[in-house]
Length: 308
Ligand code: NCD
Image 1 (cartoon, rainbow, N blue to C red):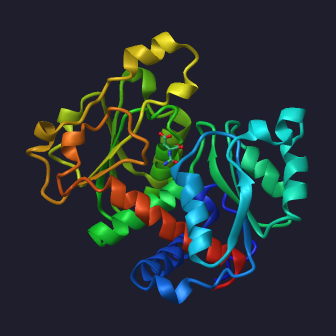
Image 2 (cartoon, helix red, strand yellow):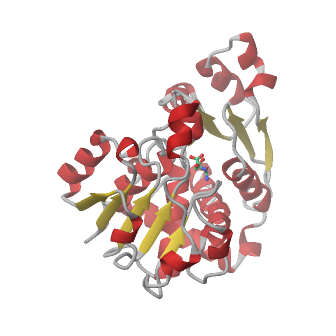
């Protein structure tokens, strides 16, 4: 299997076998990082971030630096030629001459895909509007695989802003490809998972989906509780956001009867949907999850660059 030169725009760009290959190498990178600390010597990663980011950009940069490569890019498009009106297709045609691989985050859905059509180097979607976030999904899957041993057969609750949250769109589409998955979608009625995503996974993979607005309905049942932030920046007015911002606040007492080995995950940043009292519970794995994000991005880039 050869991933060299490929783009990652949508998680379904890769087969399950290819994803598995990325996870296997990522797990080896966790165990023996020194084996990989020079494999990207001479390679340059470009990070083009047209929207705010902490984890995604820094974990990509950390990943490239940990493999002996170098980085360049911008974290604020207002300091780049975008401010002068440059199009993304022109920017990528310049940047591909300065780098060997590029990650792009953009508020417009489809922008990284458009860039990939013009690019001579692999392009990775670092999140496009409320659409997709494939490398967060790789991070989530590596976390589940490592901590649970298996992705198949899990009951997963996705909770929070399922309408605008791009992480959960990519995640449900990808988890649905595994065997015997069951999903509980927990959100206020105004923030339900878009019909196009639900219909796609139901029709394509025949998965079981139950929708509710109460976390208490599902907490004792699930193997994975995936919390998300209400996506303030995607609301059309502040008033609607204020009404919904505290829809879910997970506290230590709410998880008392949950399964012993349930994983509480979150792509981060959290606002107040998980109380700090939950952090010391061994089931709370969101900071571990953020760390797995570095290793999975190392493995992804090493494969796309063909150095592995
Ligand atoms: C997420 C994102 O940008 O979509 N953050 C991340 O990359 N870990 C989640 C969020 O912002 O809520």
